[in-house]
Image (cartoon, rainbow, N blue to C red; front, side):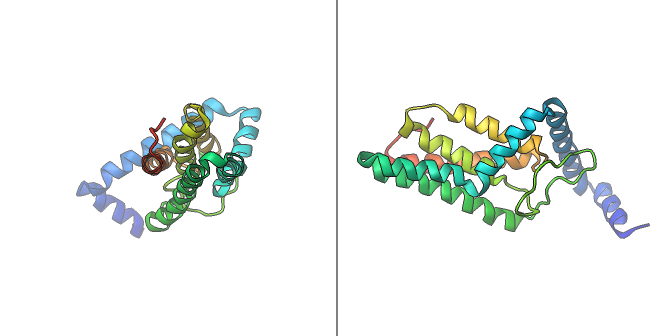
Length: 190
């Protein structure tokens, strides 16, 4: 019997692996369901464009820097908000290196985009987008986070580059960083 099979059986026998195994199966099943429901060429193209804009939080950082450049009256608030987005991205990279969860690798999951690393937890795209949604919302007077975050989250699943739990974890952490920045700016969050 292979060593990994022996270890899996021992974990299952003593109960250590069963919860994680079930969780992983459920995570993969949700990922496959999203891919199956959304597998349309225009949606995949849109998801790839979002992926490129969200890579290293570049799209959100550009919005923040433009806001700081054109809104002199609230420049400090824009800079704090942009810093929160940058901190979210950096935090995601750090957490990925600690957690070291591999990206989806189930043969039934289509990977439709390239990624800069093989690490998955948390989704840096979801983390920076959640932070941007929370911090830029009050500055723009918009509730774009209600659209931006779900769209970015679904794009990560459609492209097969994250499990749902990666995206959810990133969104929660990014929103928390955004909320902290808004409190520093004296603003409510979206």
